[in-house]
Length: 388
Ligand code: SF4
Image (cartoon, rainbow, N blue to C red; front, side, top):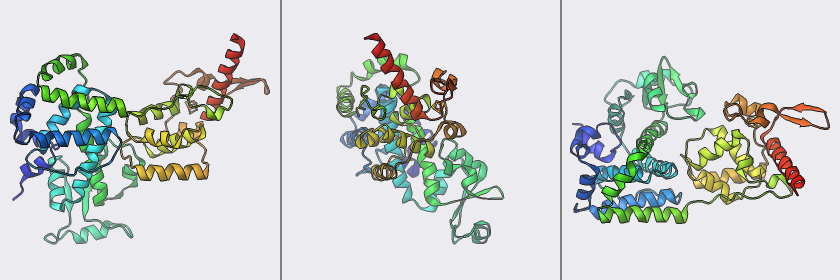
């Protein structure tokens, strides 16, 4: 007998939450939080919330050291209220990333039948091979050499799960696809489910800023809640990464002020700082660009620490590797082919109209983001000399 309530308690981001915990949805946030702070397990709930916030804000990837079925859904509601009130996209992204990683690790230990039920709850039709079925033959017939899995999913369901992901390798064309069926490995399936959890947390970000202040006034009447909220914000203000934006100096490659980066690179940089999902090529370009303009190693790691899928060790290895190899950031032609040139969108004069080359006595197009930086620096220096 499937116990969906048990699964929903464990994974409160599933749609069936509203069926099993309707009573919480009907309560006002004030009523809900008042009950939380008189709940016999309030300390454990506070501990869960604090653990997730503090680790997320420090860019740590700790797994939740304690887990309790009886309060997991309460912590979920609490977390969402907190994010709504804080109303800072960078914090929401960091928390969503960590929360989804915790869920990923939990999901890795799930049985195939539980994964099936989780998918079912998300209206995704997953099939898996089990000794009780005769599916094995079908699975083997369709899988290419060396690829084995017990999970398959109809391609429209795959698209439903992967729709939010921008990475290339999630694309349907990169999957083991045969006759409309995607053969998917457990880890990849779980990665898609992780994204669902992340998305549910991201929904906490407010689109209703007008009401936040009045909601805060109301909820801060619960002193204990106010103090949890204030401690988290105080911690963030002390620990949030500071990105060194430096003044110009003699060497253009020391130019670290992102104000002078071209739109293509600046868009990726700002998206990374805010913790958005970056595709593989965006990560590569940004890493190589920041190395080229001599950002400190730690600053580069800090920038990536908000990004979904951040893994400190892997990022450190990749940045070190890129430094050793001396890769150059993508040229404009490559960025354009990837749809990452924002020259028109940002109406950037230098990118759109090019620059005048005295040597060649003609206007030249920008062909590389580093040339953009070099020209901006040259123009500013010239302006400074003339204004003296
Ligand atoms: S023209 Fe080149 S430097 Fe400018 S935004 Fe496009 S890709 Fe970037």
